[in-house]
Length: 483
Image (tube, rainbow, N blue to C red; front, side, top):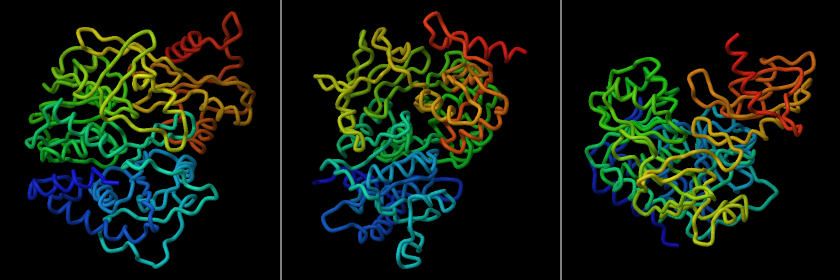
């Protein structure tokens, strides 16, 4: 196989030499320095590949320059990086390791990875600075054989685990490169841009807009560690002179609530995706900061799809280069040059979502008005909270296992600030409390799947045919909030 991504990165790193490539709170690397570190780290990885096999390397860490070094090192070593959300818990990480046949795992030293890793023979084998503050561990052997990768797969990313088992999406190098090139062309990204990225690089919002896409024209990528609070954002913008801000809607809502205006003088564009950004928040953010918010729509399986170039109107913008969007009674169907190939660990599921013309069924509903995409809902049951898709049935099943729970309904509700949150209404006997139920969820689910709102009742209200009435459940929550 002639890999695409190593050559694309090699060319970009060589062309932009002494320009700043990537920074975090502790480190700044030029393109030349990034190339040197990534090549040195790749040399450490290469000997671990079995004859005729490509190494499968999981990445389970927060954003950092070390993460970027490791990602490039995997590509340069001929390995396949598997980018897992660092918010996944040990249970989901173990499923990923087994389902995908991972060989090595790159992670923070304090990450809870004991269930899936074992010590690499030879103490200090990866000590030497190439991976910076990250640790490289061997993944323990599982009984099930590793599923074969497609010959052109170069990167794997994951869905949010909405069915309890994150689906592993295989991407060809050509698809990843097309996503980056089309984003650069469609959004006018240039060497003058300095991107402040607050989304995880494992997520499509950052992966497609702020990794290879930043390096192709010679822009600089600035990463933040820790919770993306409004004050942390302001410090990042001020210290980097950022021209672009990439973040989820919750962050813009936080800035609006706190009326934070510092640090935005040089920012020309703010990019939002992952969940709907309310028009009122977008308008107030622009009024406070003077910065337009450009909505962007994409799905994990198909990459970036639309972009709102003017940053002033409603909707999610027009299709990016290489993208076709169909909106009809079947819901939104898309075809793009950045499409994934399949789910490695769920044979046939991805293929079943692709129609006869090669368009992927997104599960969203919407319409095109003067070429601009507007979403109106979901064709399925998934809840979109903070850019992550969550299956409420999975959450309900977990809560039903808690002592004293008679019945439970999990659903999307409106939070105190109007943002979508995951809520759970539970019929319980004497004993369970909100605190004990929250702890029960936290022990079994990643943090983003723990409901934000718990409400305890004697009986779940039902409609005329005996099914839970979500409308009455939402009314219960509204009444409880007003009391």
